Structures are given as structure tokens and as C-alpha cells.
Image (tube, rainbow, N blue to C red; front, side, top):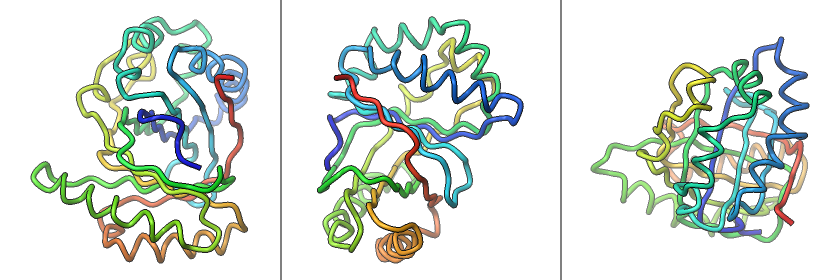
Length: 221
């Protein structure tokens, strides 16, 4: 299934062990419903690592990337709840990008996801994005692949120092290009197929590839 709009927020992070239970309670009870209550937000998903450098991957889909630069979302980021402030202090190694959806194709929503965080020099950004975009239809032909999506980060919006970001502390990494491949089958065949497919695109040497399993989905409806 294609993503539910042309805007997306992609977030990877670890959680300190002492904040893990709090994170799960907060994320499902308060944070995801809050985000999906923002006009224009359509769906939120959280994944946990199968084989990845960062344990959690969160994806929020919005009607457009303009929603993600808008006042409603910015207001939430600059007015975090007390529970949010308490919880995000346990976040570690955050990578976060506010993105436009460059391409999105699919047949279903998969319970598995592979993410490729892929940075390119400014001069090569258009070429690098085009190479990934051109490879999506071939990835979708792979057995067990439910969907494939390419996101391009808005560096200025992603780098904004909001109150919530300051509460987390540290500096967020901002991945420039993000490839997401969804799968509906068993883990080992999916991992092997995606590794082969991404290698064929010629970007694995400079990208960070991780594999995740879905934990929770929430939609605005």
C-alpha cells in the first residue's frame, strides 16, 4: 500500500533501559494519539529492530509536507506535555527527518520494514534520489515485498530547535534520503531479498540498512 499522503516524519532512536517502560506507556497512550490529532496527520507506526543500529523506527504519514511545516505541528513540538518532557529525556542517538514523499508504491501494509538511511553530497542529491526512485518498481516485484517508499528530507525543517528537541538533549542526525521497504512474509527471506535488492541499487556502501518488526499502528480515523 502507498503511504497516506506526501509528507512523512521518520524517526530512529534508542531508549535508555530505565525509561523503557515509561516510553511504551507514553508512546501508545499519549504521544501517538496526540500526533494523530493534528490536522493533516493520517497514520503513525512504531517498529522495533530485528537487525538494526537503532532499536526503534517511527513513521508518521501526513497529507502533505506542508502539514509538517505548519503551525499546528510546530505548536505541539514547542508545547510538549509534562509526560513528553519526562519521557524524551531517555531517548538516545536520535535520527529524525521531516520529509516529502518522493515516491510510494505498494500492494499492502507489511508487518516488516527495512529502512535505508542514505546521505548524498548536495551536488549529487537529484541523481541519488532518481536512482532510488527508479529502483522502487523492481523492489516491488520481489517476493514478499508489500511496498516501497522514497522520502527526501527537508533539512531546514528537520533541523529546527524546538522545545521538544531541546528536552531530548543532544543533536539529531538528519538522514537526507530514506528508502522504506515493507514486507509481509517471514523475516529471514525478507531480509535476504531486501539486501539483494538494495545492493542492486548501488547504495548500500554509503547507507545504513536496518530491519524492523511492526509493534503498533494508529490512524486518524
